[in-house]
Length: 332
Image 1 (cartoon, one colour):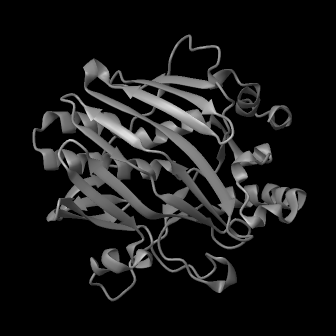
Image 2 (cartoon, helix red, strand yellow; image 1 turned 60 degrees about the vertical axis):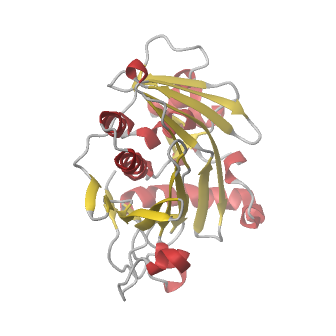
C-alpha cells in the first residue's frame, strides 16, 4: 500500500474546503476501494452513528478489514522494542535510557497507519508470537463489553518485560471524520528493574467519504520513569494544543500537524527538550534518536503449536486471507 507524509497544503484534504497541513495521507487507490463499502455501511446503520456511538461494537463490511485480529495488530506498537530496549540495557545513564524509551514509542507509531480495520477479538481469544531477539509475545481478549485485551512480552534472558492492556474505542465526528483511541498503560521493565510507563495519543481520521484521507495523532503521550522520577508530556500537534506546548515553537508559520514537542523534567528541573515528527524523526536537545528507515523494525513470527484459542484459527480470518470475502462476512 502506498503511503506518504503530507507536509504541504492540500486544499481538498478535508470537507468544507478546509486545508490540512501535516499528518499521514493514504493512497487514492486504497481510499477509492473502501469508500464504496463505507457508503453502503452508513446507509445501513442510519444516523445512529453520528450521535457518538462506539463503532467497535458495530458490524462492518469485511471489505474494510485486514486479515488480522486486534490481538496481532496491537504488537505494532512494539515494532522497535528489541532495538531500543537492547540499547537501554547497554547504558547506565538514566536520562539516556528515558530518551531511548521515548524513541521506541514514537518510532512504532509510524507502523500503526494501516488503512484497514483489524477483526475484533472474541472473548478468550489469544495470540502467541515471538520477536527475532527471542522475546515471547502473548495476548488475550479478557473482556467483551467493553472490549479489552491484555498482553505480555518477555524479552530474552530477562532483558525486558512489557505488559499492559488495550481498550479501543472509535466514533464518528460528523460524516467525514473519525476519532479513535487505544487506552490503557504500556509498562516496561528493564533488566535491572527500572520501570517505565506511557500511554498512546488518540487519532483523528479525516476524509472518510470525500477529500484526501489523512490520519493525524493528537493529544499528549505521558512518559514516566517510575524508578527515577523522570517525566515527559509529549504533545502531538502542539499548535492545536496551545498553551505551553505551542510556546515551544517560535516559528511564525503554523507547524505541520504531525509535529511533536515536550520537555523532560525531574521535579521542577528541566533536563532536555523533545521535538520532531511522529512520521519521520525524534530529537532530544537536537540529538537525533530516531529517523525513519534508519532503524530496523521487528515483525512478530507466529509460534508453532499455539493454543487452540489462537486467532489464527478463526474462520473469518482464514477466509479473508484466502480472498473469500463472502465466507469471511458470514462469520463476522
